[in-house]
Structures are given as C-alpha cells and as structure tokens.
Image 1: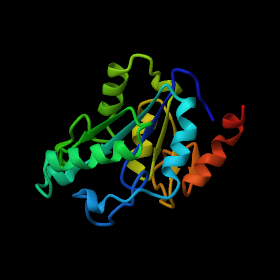
Image 2 (image 1 turned 90 degrees about the vertical axis):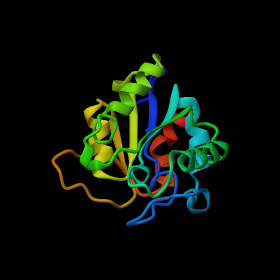
Image 3 (image 1 turned 45 degrees about the horizontal axis):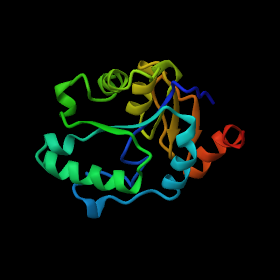
Image 4 (image 1 turned 90 degrees about the horizontal axis):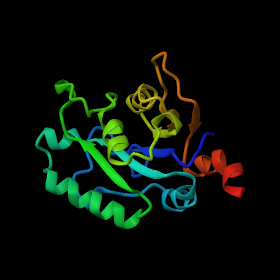
Length: 178
C-alpha cells in the first residue's frame, strides 16, 4: 500500500461513505446513512495522506430529482460527520453529456491536484465501489481499491479489494502501527 506526504486518498461517496440507494439517488440528508466504521477508519487514515478528497458523480441533480442546494446540504452534513475530508468535488452532468469531470473522466482529480499542489496523483489512492471509480483512479495514475462486492468486467482491474471499512483498516494496519 503506497503512501507518501504527497499522496491523497480519493473516495467515491455513494456505496463507499454512505449507503447506496440501488436504482435511485440520495436526495436529502434523511437518506444519507454513513456506512459502518467509515468515520473511525478515516480518522486513522488521515495522518497517512496529505489530503482526503471525495469525488462523486451526482446526476440526480442533472435529472432534476434534486437541486445543487439539496446536494450542498448533504455534503455540509457529511463534512460535519467526517471532518477529516478536505474537499468534495461533484459532477452533476448526465452520463450522456460526457462531461470532463464525470467519472471515469479525470477532471475532478485534475481539479483537486490544481487546488492542492501538494498532491501527487501518482502517489494517491482511489477507493470506489464501481467500475467507473476504478477506471477514474487508473486513468489518473492512482492505485485503486474496489470497495464492496461489485465485480469488474473490463480489463482494468483494481489493485486491492475490500468488502467494508474494517478490511480497509486491515489493508493499512502495518502502516498505521508505525
């Protein structure tokens, strides 16, 4: 597992930080439910990374199912619960729009690297629960962890697998003990 003072931990949101609504969207704070152990593990990981960044596609906004203001409320509350997160980047464009910020395109990673010059994408790590997240991480030059029990059908494979936050902690256990 790589980590340097220049590395960042990039996280997808739905399905990694909070429960994913299958076939739907987290549209308000009442639907935003943190996954078990996310806060405690992120707190332990914080010293290992220059920055912790959330990168999330949120096409529910683009579909008109929620507003940018609704999304901002969710992210404000998430940051209160997870103060170790340095920044949240989102793309509300529809998948059909092929926006440069929409994962698997790497626009959000490039924005984070521009906003935080101390970040080296090549030294960073992406944790995501979908093929799109893994492609995003690989295209940005990062190592990747596939979170949950999703399977990848493309030729792009994650570097590591973790079904839950306890397994993430186990992946980093040797580093955290030093």
